[in-house]
Length: 291
Image (cartoon, rainbow, N blue to C red):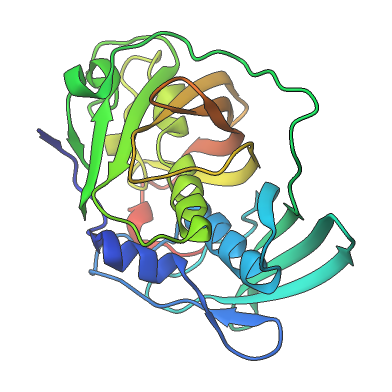
């Protein structure tokens, strides 16, 4: 098994506690903190998942079907996040909300989410999954969540700048050993992983550039995630994340991605915009909270 240094999340229950924000007044929620003294910055995909949970708790019986999250300022992992939900529209079938993520007077992210009462199919089609090796033959990778089984096709995810170059594509299989039987939490776990590998996919074709340099000599981070959740998902079953970077340049990267069930059913589509920039002074980005 390959191990990469990074934030030690704990087990699945710890991750779920972080994502399952708790009510804290009218249309307000607050997150728990889990910080091990490592990297200080909260991931944009974590805030996206927490925004999904907050919106879903205020619209019970409706399923989040799309969201767009912009992480305008970084958040400090040592402090709780505060989420305020603003209802824009609430009709018979659709609920549209804004979720503002704060730390004190700092607005760190804003998410616009659409929740649906759902309906039977009138028409259905989906983009088929590109063929890849299955989870049983893909090398495991430890990203510091015990109880989460992560397998990367062809071992394509690495932090080594001297690793062989390849296409800007990374496929990863993810499955949790045990997850509470709550569709909102399963959806949140799906979204939380969306920001993990798109930057690595963008770096893969470029010799001498690797994740090991992130937050050290390179300033990297996810700035925006747009997602569509096509069907309910079970994260205690294998889900394949297909990350494909379509552009890198001008200090930014863009990735068009999909999430599939093991049988090939398309459960989500998402895009990720991120930055990859050199630090002018070579400082250690891990110790910086401001972007």
